[in-house]
Length: 87
Image 1 (cartoon, rainbow, N blue to C red):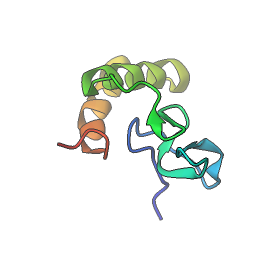
Image 2: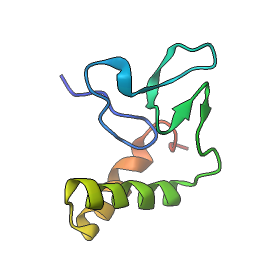
Image 3: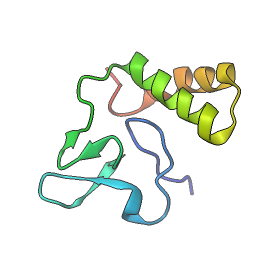
Image 4: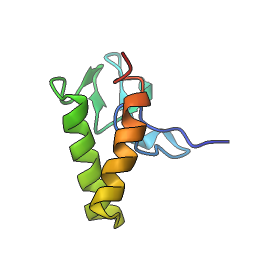
């Protein structure tokens, strides 16, 4: 079974609900991580897909050791398919 990923940034959210964001009523979001979504709203509502690609690619390089070009390529392919960014 594939691990659940945030539908905004693509971050793996693990098997427990500690990484999940919250809805306005305090329940855990089923789609978004706590970095992207809190109390029923996006934490950075004005972010564009292009901005999110840069943010996520930077995290991939700094925290996970990806090569910059590889990180950008993966983000350019993966992020547009996520719920938040689909047209």
